[in-house]
Length: 479
Image 1 (cartoon, rainbow, N blue to C red):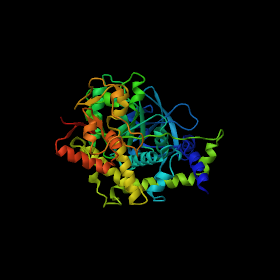
Image 2: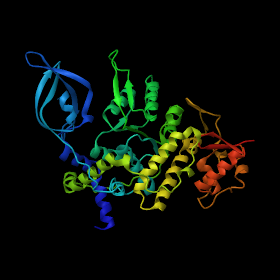
Image 3: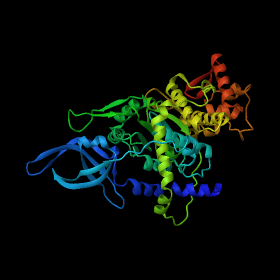
Image 4: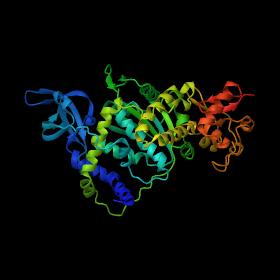
């Protein structure tokens, strides 16, 4: 198969409806831990009002318009995932349940049918206007789900493709949740039943917001056990065991929200949430073009072996990431600088570097990937350029985001014409900064320095007392 045919085939295979058809053909009659609703309860059956203890599960089956509600005995929960063989209807306390009377425990054996690079390159719709950022994104999503304890935030324009890829992976691997209109109850339910939770878009800042932020701070600290003491039933408490949980945010660039008269992420969340989730600003757009007529069921059947090999390989990495080492240990990661307030980000970067080392074909590509990931993080610090368009200069404090006096966009930092035509030089940079606050990416573009030399320049001038960091990634000349 030539390269063009491979791209076309991947394009169709990773259409959400095709992946959904594979899921339905193979897993429609399987119950997973993520199907559990709430905590242990009981149903009342028979004339003798006998109690059966267990759990309620809910699943939307193929071609159904409403979820089917199941009841699974407590002793059978350990066998999940379970293929449904037989059920009987039970009426209890005004509700109807399908009591599982016969089932078979289903386990997919992990097997490395594909190496990490294949898992990434052979997943997702392949055409994107920024292939490098698309590759970084796919690595991050899959690593987050399989390795666990990855906490990040992704900022893009609409149509980057962030939801499409996540949804496709979710259909194949399960134990993933995508929360829209986020709230504390939704978040806590999701972390109790999933290994990877995504918070899609921004919440309404209501009475629940403080609890929501406190929960996010605890998760971002890497806690392994989290109690929910805000259940409606007085005196009850739900406990989430989240030692392998990953949580991420996705949202649009600040200008999108400002154009609608809304606050962006940095204006909404307190700093102690912001600094727990490693943020990157990826650019580009997914190029998802499909034929007018697609037989998704046929495609799913034709590629059944591929999907199963892909899943088995993912499960192998899930079982083995804790033993895998960085393939390029000679590359000194200390060259990527993080402020004292960003120790968590440094830890995240080092951890994600291990993932990228298993994707890169050689040391040179590994460094290129790291450089770009760091640039996307440094350039995404508070999205300064986007907020400036609104005529405001953001200032972070420990517990909230405030705004300094508006600044005229026309008086902002001069922009270089292209990456080969900087408007300043390292020798003149301090003078050109004047009394304005410059972001890391502004300094890099306008000086013509790469990240390595810019970091050395910043360290040298901070040591001399020439500049200071007004907030992470944003600098001003010390008069």
